[in-house]
Image (cartoon, rainbow, N blue to C red; front, side):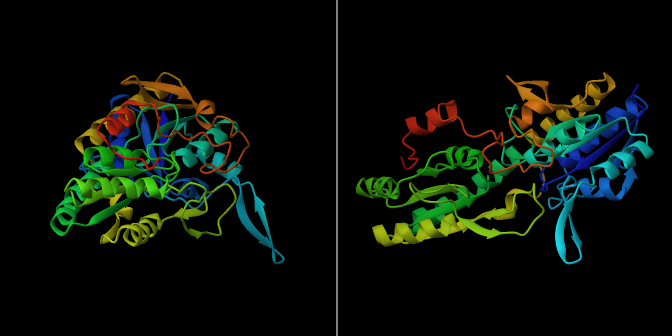
Length: 378
């Protein structure tokens, strides 16, 4: 019987995290289950830094609150921690200390709120005997086995609002306006916001684009008197025979995604202006997409995920990820989430073995976008 559960939020902040926490706390109270939160994700788990969450005051005012009340971290891999011995860098596995901390606190189940990296570590902990239930969080919508992650809808709404505003400037000044959005190696935000915001060109990581095709679309619009264009580009998009635009490569612990993407929007702006002579400007939306108040859709989804996670724990169903499939709540083994990326402590993100959920090029959104004349640069 589950008597104590704990929550950690890991990776980038995301609208809806607090709504999930709230749902778990309140569902736990109904079943007389104690609830704890580890501070700053896996870092707090390693350092045994936690707070008790079981009371109505802790869960009050969280539904519409952005960020996470228990903090987050995206720069630690407890399975491969950096250690300097006599001037030489080595890496050690600190996961056993995390497990000891869980046992000392008598935690029966740990809820991991995060994206592909968080759930990869969660799966690795299950191989060490920890009971875990993952909840898919990321604005990128790239966690496999689920139709949607919480935070995605809010990011899309933010990007759509930006496109609505850029549209007026583009039309007033007869310019090409580019919006660079997040998404890493998946183009979900670009596709959804571009479709909702009336983009003329959408460039995503799943399709290497031909700049000549992009120019062709812009010039075709100019010929029919539409002397402005809107372009949405995902940060991970790349030209044919080219590479993704890397803003910086960080010195991080092995097992973490050290690549920071960015800059493709500015590159496109220069190319388009040089090739068309038309004034072109780029706006990089950046972290605005990740912060702030969650939409109603994300509040509902987060609440559903939180309640379902606690229900599964009460039923003794562990080592799974709560998902939405065919519009209904369900769960899948964490082994399915990591796919072939089975090595303990291995990296998630941009690797051949990583099991990311990418845009379905034959899906309904893609079909709708192409049907109404949106160009993908191919």
